[in-house]
Length: 563
View 1 (cartoon, one colour):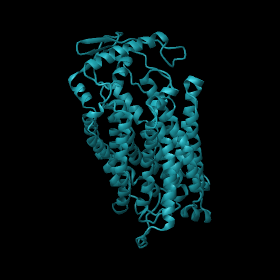
View 2 (cartoon, rainbow, N blue to C red; view 1 turned 180 degrees about the horizontal axis):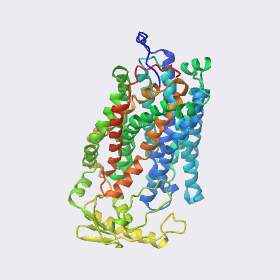
View 3 (cartoon, rainbow, N blue to C red; view 1 turned 90 degrees about the vertical axis):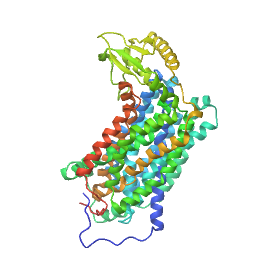
């Protein structure tokens, strides 16, 4: 672990930021903005990609699309291992130059990739492969950028310097939303759904060229250059980082006591908020994206604020406060989003109770990491249809072996057990016809009970929705603004890139990246549109407890320490 300066050796406050330091921050941050832009396009356009690359009903294809999105997050820790090792052995600069080349090329190819109707099963296979390449590249990118900036920063400004890196994820998302909205406004809805969604992916080739040019002009970090000149670089970073209990213990604490909670707060405030607005509240894509973009624009300066504040009062307590406040307020905030975003849905949820009567043995947790299973029981078909329509429901146990039924007011609709195709990927032809009829009947009954098929744009209280989204983003800035500096300070120079990258990307790649899919499956299981929030709440509370008890403050650590 990095050490605190020896007694009597405290350094004087550093002077103002130099021209070279500005260049380091700008070059690292701008390149990372472009890289996050590439990565977020898929998440923002998941609904369109689902229709082009996956087969099945809308609920299933959307889950598959989210899982393909999550695949990029799942492999991020492996990218951290590969590129972290290279960064600790050969240097920071060239390693994260390679990562941006991989990311940019993968994104551009997505824009050209034919859909399922053209090349069949090869389409989703290639798409997921490209997502994996993007995830590997991002696994190496963040650790390199954060380490590079921190190792250039004065000792009393590491929080404020690295906070600029922390803004890049939000700004990358913001940039992707602007390009998507600009493209969407330039054409018809039909044209955008058919081919226009590809344009933001293709535009990334321009951003790639700019990013590579910027990265080529950078010098190696002084901490790594000094260590290399002294012959103290690690010959086996992975072994040193994870094969010795002293460092491995810090890695585990960094994961459970910092990054896991930071990740779920981050993804709840940005991605899940967008999914909730578009998929649950049925707010149109354009107003939902504009509202989130506005919240991000208002909230982004607070990354710098909390990063700078952490230089004065410490990193840990700010991060812990963000986790705790988020966990305590998510339920009222998301219920308020329903109230102000789709009041007709809120009224229907209160006034038109729905019941699913089913054999409990046929009701499953509809989460499938590999995307190879289809949930075919009568209970699963009924609950998936209701969840997709943003309908809350209660479950009543029925005798074993009985077919599930939906009760909406005085109307009762029988579900069915579907038969699968030979490959097990979808319902057979007869079952698909049954499913279509069942959904049509259910949709009509739900509509008659007062559930809106989409949010009325005139009924959306946009200032209040914007305020609620801003509050969610503010939590994000609290946990994310100081995290890069804290992770850098936890580990010695010789294995810093490797050590900090792994817990960051397990936290953000696994705990955070799987949040939308897990939350969607929880909603379908429980029959409550808010039930998915229990996932980030529980993880954030675990991080709060572990972090407060076992993680030490790091702001005064000496990051030039090699042991």
